[in-house]
Every structure is written in structure tokens, then in C-alpha cells.
Length: 104
Image: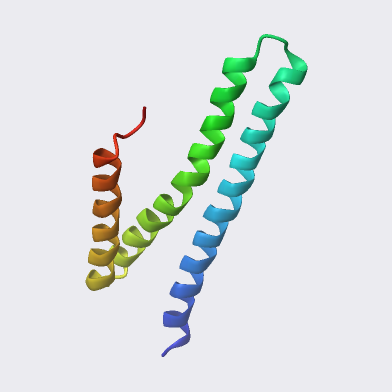
């Protein structure tokens, strides 16, 4: 394999690692803000709960975003079999989301 060909998977790995790392830090910060809101403002119970829920939702969404990024990367690299598998995984996630009731 040529050196240029070996850099593409490394670039994808780097992008995936950054997505997961930055996303996890962002979700953690959002949850921390939600947990600190009741300490700062007294009637912040419902708002704090919703902020924490957003942070948890982001943590749940990160693996889905990873699959989306991989699907796009596989299509760009013309790896249609892997792109189809990633698209199938996204379809399964979407069906599970709809069957499970979505966001309540």
C-alpha cells in the first residue's frame, strides 16, 4: 500500500477521535453546568434537569454521529460496501428510534 493510501484511514481515525473526544468534553461540561445550576439560582430545578438531559442526549448521540461520519467518509473513498453497511446501521438506529417512541 502506498503512503498516501495509508494516510486516509489515519485521517479518518483522527477525525473520529476528535469528534468523540470533543463531544464527550462538551457533554460533560453541559451536564456539569446543569448540576451546578441549583447551587447558583434557587428556582432552577426544571431548567437544571433539562440542561442535564441535553448533556446526556449528546452522549447518546455521539456514536450515531460517528456512524454518520464513517458513512460519509466511506462514500467519499468510494468504499461502497462499507458505506452501505454504515447506512444500514443508521437505518436500524432510525427504525429503533421511531419504534421506541422517539423523544418523549
